Length: 83
Image (cartoon, rainbow, N blue to C red; front, side, top):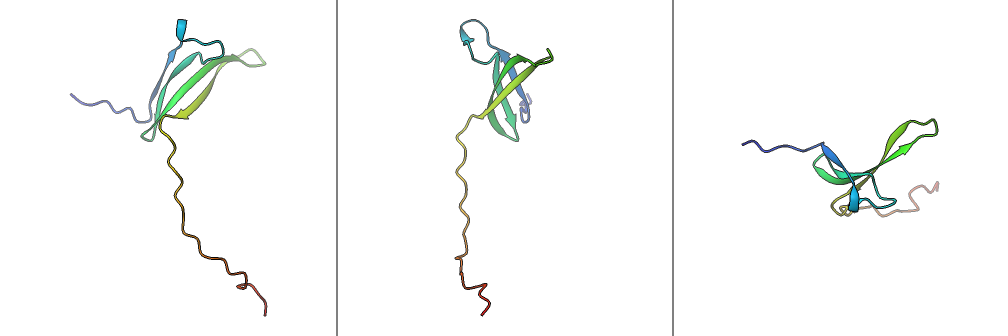
């Protein structure tokens, strides 16, 4: 059996009943982008002109990787001295 590849795919599920908080998302799910997994939440809202739309929030499932430090060259203030 072939394993399903969910890269660059996601799903939202309607929050109903006990799972639905007062200000909580109307839909929750997950999303994979480029091999990294994210939590996905969506709220149904109405625009000023009356059109319904989804407002979404995306959060990484894993802790962000620490930024790599790059080696810096020491600054010599005398490099640009005109004399």
